[in-house]
Amino acid sequence: MSDESRPHRTAAVIPAAGRGVRLGPGAPKALRTLGGTPMLIHAVRAMARSRAVSLVVVVAPSDGAPEVRRLLDEHPLPERTEVLVVPGRETRQGSVRAGLEALPADVTSVLVHDAARPLVPVETVDAVIEAVRDGAPAVVPALALADTVKEVEPGKPGEPEPVVATPERARLRAVQTPQGFDLATLLRAHEKFALTSAGASAAGPGPGVEGEGATDDAGMVERLGVTVVAVPGHEEAFKVTRPLDLVLAEAVLARRRATDAY
Ligand SMILES: Nc1ccn([C@@H]2O[C@H](COP(=O)(O)OP(=O)(O)OP(=O)(O)O)[C@@H](O)[C@H]2O)c(=O)n1
Ligand SMILES: C[C@](O)(CO)[C@H](O)COP(=O)(O)O
Image 1: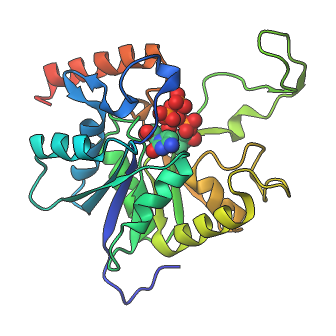
Image 2: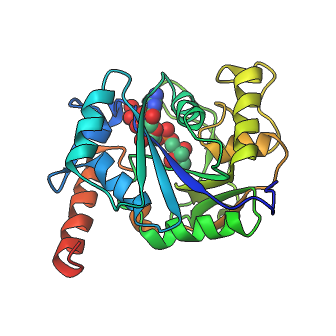
């Protein structure tokens, strides 16, 4: 819960330490370019565009912190924005934790934003921050789905998989980042996750969380029994995961540069 007597300070943690295996061979995903600029720099700028974010912690590939520091120095941010770089860990959640551990004591709320979502608009960032500052302990930007979703019994790759259920689409959302949190709540969630699971819990998932451990930070907060709320996400906040996403990201960026002096 947020302490009303403390002044707000919001930081953003950007996990950028992944390899980008699904994108195919090449440099670590966050360092690959989009419109000539590393994806990570786009993501950092997306956070810094919000006047409410005064600190960005970049979690670099474990052997790439000096290179990331150099890139950040070459792409300066508004003066109001401080940037720290820390080395990442083996899993996304480990990398997020490394970023949280670097936060100074005056930070009260935090955004966790994938470097792999370079084009999130500032309106989405601000909507998440506003909901946290209004008292929600955990906030996710989310979109309704266009496809029908089936639950299957996973089989061997390439083999038909039996469908076991069709969840009601109107109740489903695809969640994006930045996800926003009261910092104390997210720290508690990470501590519990690290203690109970070292990844995936032998005791099975907590309330409202399916299989494979938590794939996002809000999922870990759900395990505490704390309510997570969704605010409208944005189509352009999509995650660059596979090669086709890179084509779409280049097109969105080219359109912005042509129309918005981006
Ligand atoms: N050990 C890891 C793994 C992931 N990430 C970050 O978490 C975000 C979301 O992860 P994802 O899109 O899955 O990136 P990768 O893990 O790089 O992708 P892949 O699974 O295809 O290798 C990315 O910004 C990625 O850099 C991280 O900081 N540390
Ligand atoms: C955090 C996330 O972007 C929310 O949709 C997503 O869960 C990350 O998944 P990934 O497999 O680590 O890319």
